[in-house]
Length: 527
Ligand code: ACM
Image 1 (cartoon, rainbow, N blue to C red):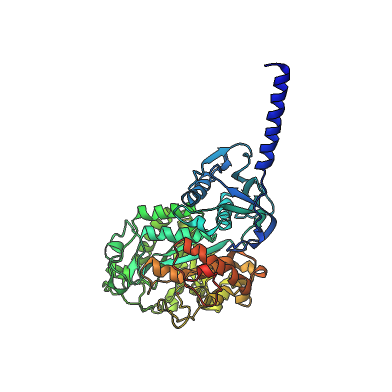
Image 2: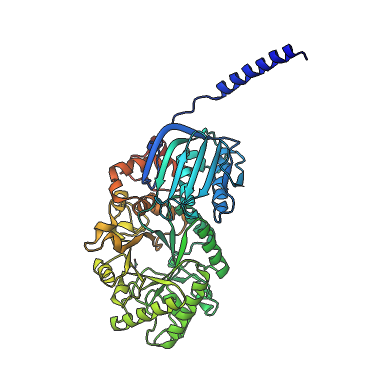
C-alpha cells in the first residue's frame, strides 16, 4: 500500500472510531437515588441523577486477600443471576476493576462503624466499601433494594437493571437488631429456619434468638441427656409430632446464619417453661416423678427443682454442649413466668445459672424477671413485660434489649379480625409496631442503657411458614428500621409510603404479608 493510500485508510478508521465512540456514549437513563424505597432507611443518601446498568458483562469483583468478602460477593451474584439471566462472574482483584462492574472492598473509614458501609454509584461502577465484612453484607442488601423489585424473582425477568447514581453512607443506630422464633410451641425445621434467616438478612437484622425449649417441647439434641429430645421433643402444641435439631443441624444453622452475618442466640428457658425436660427426666422434679407431656398453651405451671444438685449438673451439661456449638457471645436463660418457683428460690437459681453460662465462656441474656437476681457483669435484660424490672436491671448496670410485647411481639394480632395470633398484650397494627422509640419507651432508660431491639414470634398458633410470614410481615421491616435508623429520621407518615412501595418486592420474594389497610400499597402490590 502506498503512503498516500495508507494515510487515507488511517483517516477513515479515525473518523469511524470517533463516530463509534460518540454514538456508544448514549445518555444514561436518569434515576433519582434519593427517591428509592429502602428499608431500613439509610443514614444519608446523595443523588446525582444518572444510572449504572447491570448488563451481561457485569462482574462482581472483590479485594484479593481480604477474608470474609468472597462469600458476600458470591451471595450477591446468586441473587442477581436467576432474574437477570446474566452470568455475573465473581472475581478477586488487586486493583480497581474496569467500567461496568460491581466492586466490594474493605477500607478504613472513620465515618463508618463496624457494620456500616459506603456505596458510591457512578455510571461506570458500583463501589461498595466497609470496615468489616458485615458492613459489605449490609451494603449488598441495599444494592438489592436499589434494583427493580423483579430482581428478587427466581425466574428470568426483563430489566433493564438500573441503579441510581450517587452516594449512600449508612450505619446502624443499635448494635443488636434481632428477631426471635419460638420453635418449641410448634417446631420449625432447618429449611424453614434458613428461609427465615434469609428474610431477616434483607433488613440488616443481625441476631436470631431461637427459643429452643418450653413446656411443649425440647428442640436441641443434648448428647449427655438424650431423652430430652427423644421424649421431650416428640410433640408440640396441639399434639403434632414435634421435632428437634440434631447437633449437626444446629451447627449447620449457626454457620448458615453466620454467612449472613446473623448471630444465633440459643435459649433454654428455666426454671419455668420446663415441662418437656421435667417429663423426660424424673430426677429434675422435686417429687422425683416425671410429668406428662403437655400440648396445651397455658404458661407458668412448671419449674425445675431448684433445691436439687442434679438440676445444676443438668444445666451445666446442657449449657456446656450448647456453648460449644454456638459461635456467638450469648446464651439466653429465659427466666420468665416462673410462677411456681418461690422468689427465694428463683433468685439464687438465676444467680447460679449465670455463673454456669459464664464458666462456659458466654454472656447471659434473660427475660426481664431476671433483674430480681444479682446480675453479673455483661448480663443483658430483655424487656418484654415490666418496665420496673428493666429499670432494676439498669440500676445494676445491665444493658436492656427492647422487646416490649405491646409493640414488638410479632404474634400479637393486628386487630380483632386477625385469625392467627393472640392479643393478651395488645392488638398491634403496623403503625403501632413502627411508631415507638426505644430510648423514649421507659422513663429513666436512655440510649446508653439499650443494647438494641428484638422482635419475638411466639408460635402457640403458628404452625407453618405461610402463617409465620403473615404475622412477621410487614411488621418486621419496621422493627428492623427502629433498630437501624436514627429516631429523628423516622416517621410513620413517611414510612408507610415507603412500605406501600415495598409490597411489590415482598411479592417478588414470595412473602405472604398482611396487607394492612393503614398502608397505601402501590396499585400493583395490593393483594
Ligand atoms: C414471654 O413472653 N413470656 C417472655
